Image (cartoon, rainbow, N blue to C red):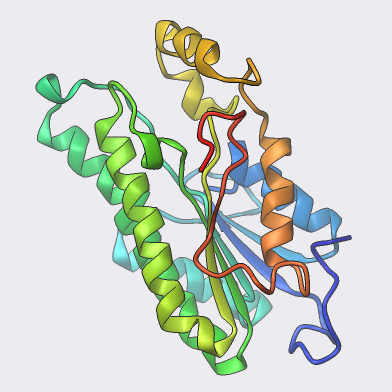
Length: 244
């Protein structure tokens, strides 16, 4: 499997890799978790959802983040790949948007990503191998009506990822983004039918994607040697909504 192949000089060559996935209990995160499990990796799912195989995590809370990642390290050791997939999507025009709605979106979709990333980069740099995969959105590139708060957060994810890549890539810690288009997930299900119908009409492919169609991109970025030249990039499984 592409997710488990590594070169002989990689520190992960002689052991199973550990993959930590925030927001991994549903949607895109869940599909990515399942793909890595099928490849034979150790997978730690971190999420607000309560389940026996999920490590409790509220990305908005610094203490929760520290405790969750400490639990992963206690069970598996060093985290080799971090997938930041936890997210929040709500709909509101700017004129009517409350500060609470704005702040909550930024806290979950951007600040939480920073807090989780900060937990792993030190050990990754020490072992001179790591992959950080941040789930952004095509709306962070093109914007979206009624979604300015979400688009702003996801644009921040892209810029954060590029800046992080400049800081850590010399230590073979590679940070990249996946910026999906609209995907059939529980988050998108909460958006109005009018918005979704209009968006489908814009897409050259004519349909939304599925989480299983996004997961292979994460496997590629985490693979060795397949992902070794991706540094600060934004890959777009987006049904043609954005064509850079």
